[in-house]
Image (cartoon, rainbow, N blue to C red):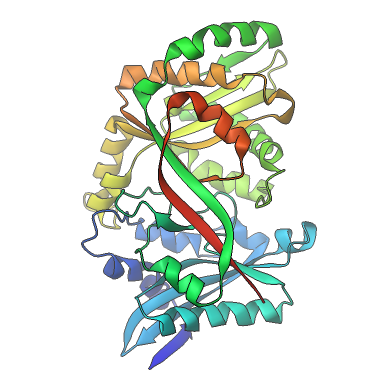
Length: 372
């Protein structure tokens, strides 16, 4: 018999976070989170997403053992301001039993109906900076710290329960050596001169902080046209500033500004922490922090986390400036592989940015939708 229980206590939240550790034990491609950080994500007193969203968390129990979990989320900015009557769900993991996944999804469905929402979609997080999508191809590639990994049987569960494809995301990678400077070095000089632009490079995280609010404003404006976009609020800006910016090598953050020092474009690259997180096994102590610090300094793989261009500068070749700077940094650090975060299949603008780098699609992921 399967019992669905709502997560309320600290002990239950710990069970919620730790369930994938047993589900993916021994899997060489799954990348575990840091347990402490994951718990803070679900803490309404610490995660500013709860200022504009609400979430409930559920565990599926069978014979006293956790066999599934799900987070049911309503983002009220999305529902009220964008008029998208969507019930979100994420952190959805389960053993290969249809009754388990069905029981968890029925809890999400009931909450959506209580709020008079029109459909449910997942897996998604609270906002656009959270993880998204169930993996449908690329199960034999190691995950990243900013994506969910899942067993190959997951998609069949969605389809068995009447869900249909909503959005598809591509994950691409390319060799750093493919970023041939001949393609953009000359354009870099011409574009800077034509539009009176200049690059900003950093060696200290504290020098980046005064620019971060502008960066998130630019992010909001550059992605606003995408169907899935929910803007980042001022409170979330502060949260992400403290949580992530100091975690990234300052040399991996590139800005482009105009003659008035207004931000025109930005890109953030992160070292790959995948193997370090596997070694950490969910804990910073006693050795997890050492593995992460070592990866921050020495990883030869990087992940393109965010890139944004102000709408009035899109299609003007501004990325040539960014890529010229990254080429110099990557060459100095001996970077081998560049991995991109999931990008909407319909986002043709982002595809244009990367077309010269011979990218290879090594993973696909999808969100699924069901009418309530």
